Length: 316
Image (cartoon, rainbow, N blue to C red; front, side, top):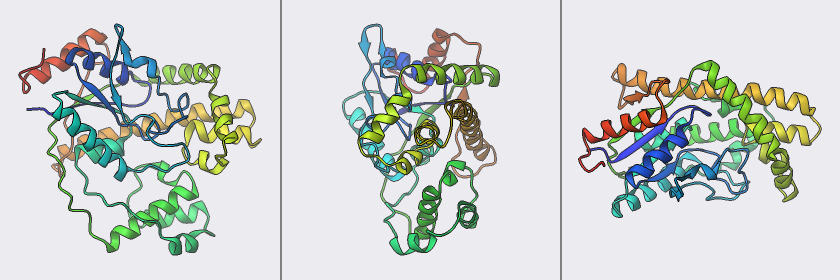
């Protein structure tokens, strides 16, 4: 019996809209799997689009959005812990949980039940790495693991944290915390590359018109440092570079647009990797049911409900 519906896909593919419609039908609740939407006051740049959670006059309950202050460095260990707390609460209340998001590491940490440990800060190691260039840090991190996610080396701070984590795991065992057994139906949502590019560019300009630059300016005014915002990448990185006079407005928009397209490609690469691992029999790789791009929203909802009914008898 399925005990979780996961709707995943790259940015701008329409997964949130679909998740809301399914939740409305099931009386379910949505658990976000977005590594940046966890932050308060980072709304436009992270694409929270909270109005999208209202369908036919009803607001669908959502979780793990806006739960920590901007400037904090939330991590996958905390996400996994928070996810299972919400998941167990939904199950206890008889509510069907729907995971929705595009942060591949967060999705995998839940679906594969990663054995994680809260890695403490290693000041001595950080000091020893502080004088190294980003290129040198990238080479060091690559010596520990294959770099699937380029955001690991987006900044020196991220790279040092990555090295810190890998060095910790080299000498310490993973946590033996017993996690609940997840039996997910995984639905993949995507669109053609051409359509995805159109949507990303259109959405970027819409968010700029809605005040995304002003949002970043406000965060800086509240005391967040440029480096702390650049840490979050994409919109916050490039707009901060613009606001600190390191990029012109035109260059900021152009480079950010390109970066978001590249990010969407990396998301798809991550999800395809999850499938390939299953195909090669590596561990517990994912069986993703990809929805045909030409299906209408109603048809997508019907397809999901039909699949759920095969192993979840109480679906409407």
